[in-house]
Length: 200
Image (cartoon, rainbow, N blue to C red; front, side, top):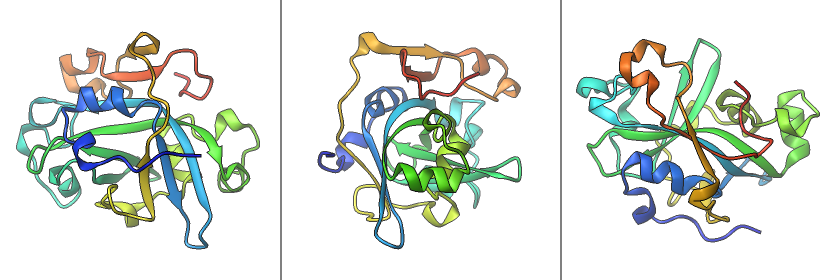
């Protein structure tokens, strides 16, 4: 069972605070046939907006691709990378403050057989242990870009079991070596010891 949907107030926080708070919460994806896929968030990266060289909004860039980053906290920002993968982000803070949290890994909870079918993979630890994997498992694509997580039936986040600060580990973000000193900042947060986090 999952709790109530997270409120707008929950999302209107700086991305580091939000990233840590998202750990343990439940991502819910309702498919067109009514089936629900759910997973506990166990790994998140924070992107700090205009000042962050690794963020799509660095320097105040505002494009068709990253327009959702500029929405109010609690919207989805979904983008395509490497010409083959989708990534699901949760917009943080307030409108016109383009910061976000990349959901990197989930612990599958409900709809696992459907996730296995979509991934072509039987091992549960391989279903959602990375941003591209979880997007494929949860049927996340451009159609969900800009979705309001507070009101959407197609995708939302509900209350779970928040992970205590003592059990949250921090490390460098992945795939942002181009971002100079920002690539070394420990802005990836994950549930220590959880077997569903991405393996690097």
